Image 1 (tube, helix red, strand yellow):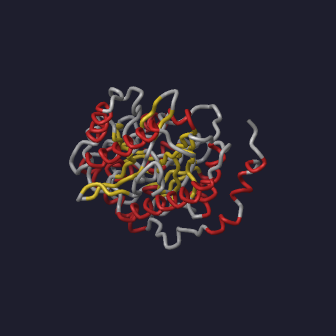
Image 2 (image 1 turned 180 degrees about the vertical axis):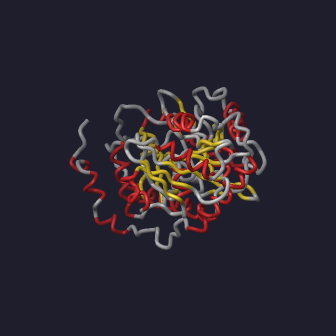
Image 3 (image 1 turned 60 degrees about the vertical axis):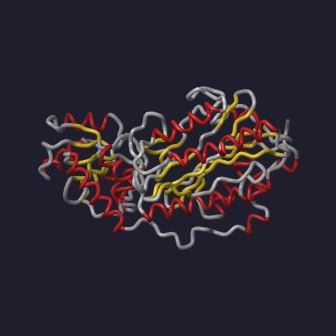
Length: 405
């Protein structure tokens, strides 16, 4: 079915005058500052001492941004940060990229550059020798590509290569007040964009059409759109949809999973509603998922294993007749994931995860229910742990008829 004239250009629709009523919500946002980055390095060095690690090696990605501010894409040319157990870090950069690298470098660091015919890991080895750390274990950040520690092993044969998880996860899993504030602002923008988009959903629209409206609103509100997944009808029965194109119709489920970033920190919110009148089955499943979210939140307590939250959901859903476990119909994915600079980051609310919940940890809460061949419902709101227990970034909606509160 071809889209009618009213749907011919979603971009034109998004540019209509009603978008002008949205105002930038990022005024007054405070970026992560130099003092905060110094505290991160202090924390990392304390964890290195506790873990017996002499240095941590990091490639471009969110951990490099977290510790150094450097925003860089990965390529065959190594751009590396070495965090030593004491003293200032070292950045190992391609020679011709140094000026561009320094544009985002946000900490005091020694910089060592390598030419195209040189081995960058020899510079890392030289730095470790100069700092008298060559005989101590080197922690590798968990997303670093294999060739980096492999080349380091050749450049520094006596090096003991270990995981840097106790250090990097130990820092990044616990969000500070400044990080929580950025995540809250990203959440507020996503909710505002949802509220603008919802009444503009029309019969015949595709998921891409609706996503374009959501992205336009998010951008106008000051967020950087990160994703806008919209699943319609049967496509909602599969957590990430299918390749088929579905269009909004009367009585159809619309599942939206959207998020944005503010200063790099992410939101992740899902809402499910029905275009027109909801059926009895749709209402029942929606209410079960709503109860699932509340059950997950109640299970999230300081000191309990993260996996116990997922276990509570499986028990509830099995009492409804779903599953067992991750089988369908039911919830085929974990109850939630960590979130921060990455949309998905350690640790997860998944069965078997033993990491204990602590203040500052942030998670999604999204125990969807999926019925293959029919439809699915997902409600997702993120929360962070406080000394008193979990606290929502966004509040779950009250009913399928009021999907945005």
